[in-house]
Amino acid sequence: MEGSDYPVPTMRGRIKLTDSIDGEKICPLDVVLDPSDDKLGDGFYFSQLTRQLYLQSSRISIDSGPPVGECEASTSWTIPDAEAEAPSNLITTGGGFVGLFQVVRYRPIGQDRVFRPPTYMLQYCPETCFNISLYSYNGVTRLASGGAPFEFGFVKVQASNEI
Image (cartoon, rainbow, N blue to C red; front, side, top):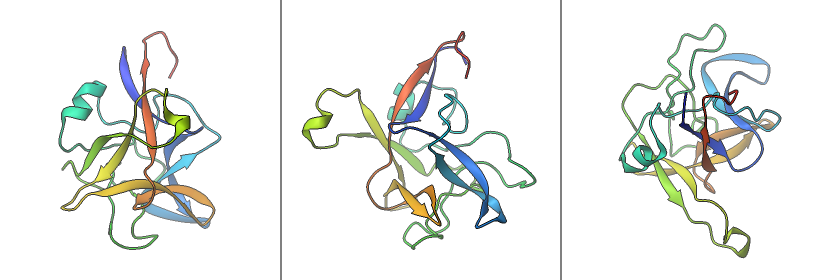
């Protein structure tokens, strides 16, 4: 997408979908951080809008693109029970088009953060808002509700860049 802003984790890796837990196939799919893969513009997007519109929207839907494997659930994100413990608080696919997520400017405290570009975090807000965090479940880093915020930035990708 020419001039599109893509959300990118501040640590190495990218957000993508997985169709298994402990070697068992699952559907809906789980949303995970793959630290070995850092291809821009794939696996995690809000829409073909700009960063400014994400920040002006009160609620957005998040999608992970085309379905993976044989699971026919939608690739829109949801959380089965944001107040529960894992695995019920893990982000999965199968959500509707109702926007229950929001992007919030993240202002971490600490001297190592003084001159960094702006970063953001996600919140899941069915009624009360819950921070979206990274959570290690069965040895895989997944996105879940609660905990320290999952921090990301935006990268503008030009038409000539391979994404």
